Amino acid sequence: LPPKAPPGSTYFLITQAAEQAFLKAALRGSVQARHGVLLLLPEGYFLYPGEKGRLALGKTPGLERALAMRGILLAHGLELKVVRGHQPLTL
Image (cartoon, rainbow, N blue to C red; front, side, top):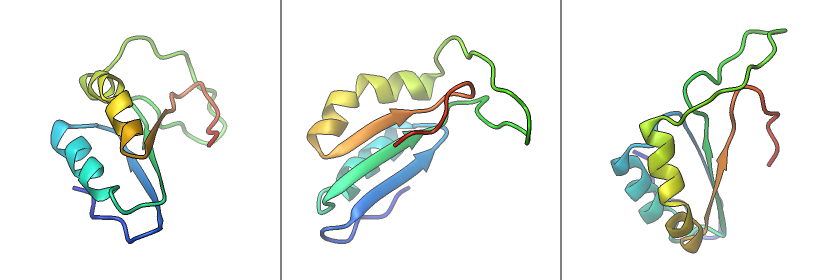
């Protein structure tokens, strides 16, 4: 589970499976942070060097859970970013 953020810091979390306990701990941990980003890399994101990404259809349970909590996360200062294998990483 993610630790609490130091006061005034940028809280940056990376996860593949957004379990309920992880999301709740992230909400508690982001209380003192100045800014927070939760980067979600759903299953199938990993690519070998030179491999091109392919369109990923469907949503894993963790992704569904995180998307359902997007408003709550944002209200607590955590911006949710979801990156799939065919998308470039932009923050």
